[in-house]
Amino acid sequence: MLDVAEGRVVLPATPAAAIAPVAPSPAVPVAGAPAVPRAWITDLPLTDEQHAILSAALVDRVRRLVIRARAGTGKTSTLRILARNTRQRLLYLVFNASNAADARRTMPSHVKAMTIHALAFHALRVPERFGPKLNARRRSRQDRYRRLGIDVAALGEREAARWLIGIDRTVRHYCHSADAELTTAQVTADPHWFLTDEELKILLACQRPDPPPVIRQQAQAIRAVRRQRVQAWAEYVIDYARAGWRQAIDPADVTVPMVPDHYLKLWQLSTPVLSGFPLIVVDEMQDSNPVTLDLLQRQDAQLIGVGDSEQAIYGWRGAVDALDRLSADRRLSLTQSFRFGPAIAEIANQILAFKSRRLGRALDPVVGNPRRLSRIGAVDDGAPYAYLCRGNAALFEAAVAALDPGCRLHLVGDLQETVSLIESAWALKRGQRRQVVHPDIRLFSCWDELRHVAEDDHHLGLVARLIEKYGDEILPLAARLSRFRSCPRETADVVAVTVHRSKGLEFSQVKLAEDFIIPVLEGPLNPEELNLLYVAVTRALDRLQINSAVQAVQAALAAPVSHADSAAPAASHGRMP
Image 1 (cartoon, rainbow, N blue to C red):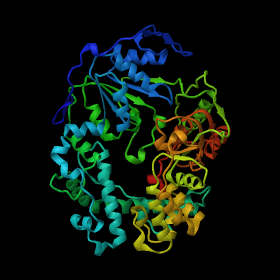
Image 2 (image 1 turned 180 degrees about the horizontal axis):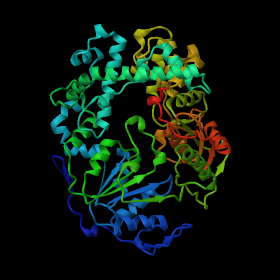
Image 3 (image 1 turned 120 degrees about the horizontal axis):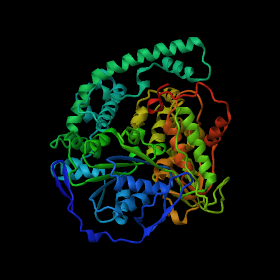
Image 4 (image 1 turned 90 degrees about the vertical axis):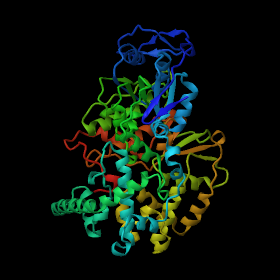
């Protein structure tokens, strides 16, 4: 039973008898690694890397330990063995509720598995203090304008909609941050809001290969002016954002629902102490955000952060690579994969090598399982396979194909967000402004403006191409897909899934969709795009069908190294040229 006080979590002691010993296991040597003679309570053979981790955590008791675990390297098994070899009360923080449920079934009874949001939920007694806000429905846009004091008549509907979106994003950014105060540094907006159509065209032209000097000069001047406009807008909107935050945490204000990010931020601001846990293990730490990292680093407990920086794919949700940011006393690695053989490991390592070249720093490779035969080539259509997409637009295409009789498709997730985008984008294209309801599409005054931005926004670009491809058929297709029901995974010919939803999954055969961004050796780099490709490749067990993005990586590695191959800041939301 969890005994929770204000900002403090205490777990009762577990009897030693609750930990059942089994026979110790000898080490399985890894080439080049030193032999570690220590035996541990486990029913699995261990690699020297796993022995080193267990020794650092439980013998040396390294206070701040980082474990970099490549794909399929037995991370979860290693943590389970670690838990079985200590009688300390252990807090195991996982990425989502599904992972927590799995851990509660497989971890020893002295381990408390939770998400960080669940921990905050209990510590703040959220149902007791904020109960009515948990089920509150967000009010209409007009009602929110009124409550926040936004003058729609003075701003115009389109600009007021941008203000509301900017306010919501600013509050969300603040909740993800470690900052105590909400300042203009948290104000978040899309850069294209502050550009004329002509200015946007010039910036996009500057991104093309070898732009003329006059375009470069004009682009530099436009970026300087844009910075001034953004700062001026931030000064205007900050007071509205602060009002939005006050409404979000006011127990009496049921017009604004309280969401997990809100109560996690409130808990972090209370500087809580997790006094009941001498050992805290954080899984998938590469996807933590600054508010979580700040909360954890304040604890006196031994802290072990586990994850893979090359699988960090939630930057759009405020995550940072907390593995890099954690002030670690020791860093160890798991590189021996048990999931796939050398052929798939070679593809994964090509992506890592490309990223290493772009970032200018070495990255640990992943070692394929020599006992597993993996192949690179076209999937066997006569056997089930997974179709991995970067985004929902490609998932839409897969579902369209499945509308044909005889195709058994299991869809991981739903298409409602994409259908909503398509419906609003189609209405914009037809000039039916009143039917444009999706907030991301309401920002545009006309179809041409959306098309300009879509040239530099991967997701909007795919939606625009779907509309242009299907034309008048797009709405009937969207309507059919909104009612689409996929078959069970066990009987499916094809499992269609986005990379984000594929985390933690593995498939015998994987076919990569063609919607991944093509990596280039020069120009701005968003490392997360390479991480998406790496995650997709490493879901395969036996056979992998690569795509154009992987082929571009292979071609680039074969090209001579250029001095221009260095990282540049990535575009915010994929939109800042």
